[in-house]
Image (cartoon, rainbow, N blue to C red; front, side, top):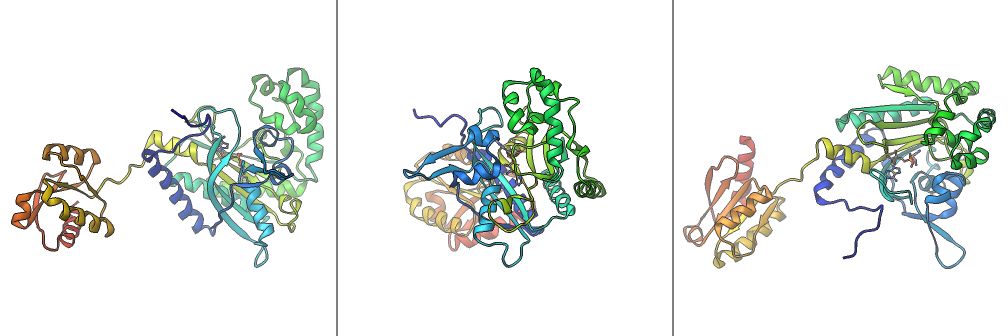
Length: 423
Ligand code: HAM
């Protein structure tokens, strides 16, 4: 049998209602905050990601699915959505009517990471990006929106970690101080981090290898190097979060795995999923739009990891699929034409209808009805047809009601409304 590819997974019907509940919650909430949806291609030119995420990041160095299309062009299955949203903001001149744009997008991303629980090679994100606003209140409002989203989903055990990564004015001094510190510790660092030392010393700060974690205990913190304007910005973000009672934690080691960030960076972590504990992450990227050839517009955003969030909800309170409103148990060949027509009409009217077209016994049909979880069963046999009335059985109360065959579809709808008002 042909199996699916390692690191990829199927999202099964048993999980899909949980996924849809998450998506619907996000859409309703984000739209209240003024966001509009954008849908973008799953592939872009490789260069877009190389330039935005950064050449010396894990994603670009080793995790991208990049293909040649025959000519010199290399295309990449998107490893994240931010770069694509920025590309579209620039290319489609989304800034022209008003530079302030709030966009969200939902869909799959691809990274060739080492697969493990909570880490897939195709995974799904809900992204939200805001362009044209440099106010720290925007950062705080995004985090507030995220927090409200998780509260609506009744997810507990979360922490909000925040840091500031400074700007091109203040980061170089921090980078230099960090490099000096790490050079002395080079003997304690893993081979990856020794390599990072030169090109991207910030990445050493979130290396998970224990010897690296020990080595960075006394490393300098970006927050001690912030210029006045970055420090004020970060101060306002924190004050605004505190005023809304968002329980954030300052994490000076939070650097994120993508190079485009400036100033505020944040991550939402859970204590319920093991090693892959980040369920959302984001931050400011004030230089990226201009760097990719657009107008100098600041930006801030985040992405929620849908797979991890769905796994959390599936553990605690999965959302069940809706059972059929009615199961039609048709007995005997003579009833088939009628029950077929009724089932079509009922479903077309929006009544969730299930029918068994086989010639099973009443006992077997009731068993199937039970398995589908249907609330009501319509029993139709030759006798019922002759008498001009069918029996509707409420599977919970076991109450039975006779319904005239004439105008049956209307009668069933009235019956279901009636039953609903009783519960
Ligand atoms: P990121 O931290 O790389 O940020 O990803 C955001 C979230 O996607 C993570 O917190 C995690 O929940 C989920 N995620 C990432 N990789 C995997 C994986 N291999 N398997 C399952 N889930 C995964 C970004 O992608 C940025 N573009 C976020 C952003 C938007 N920053 C500004 N705007």
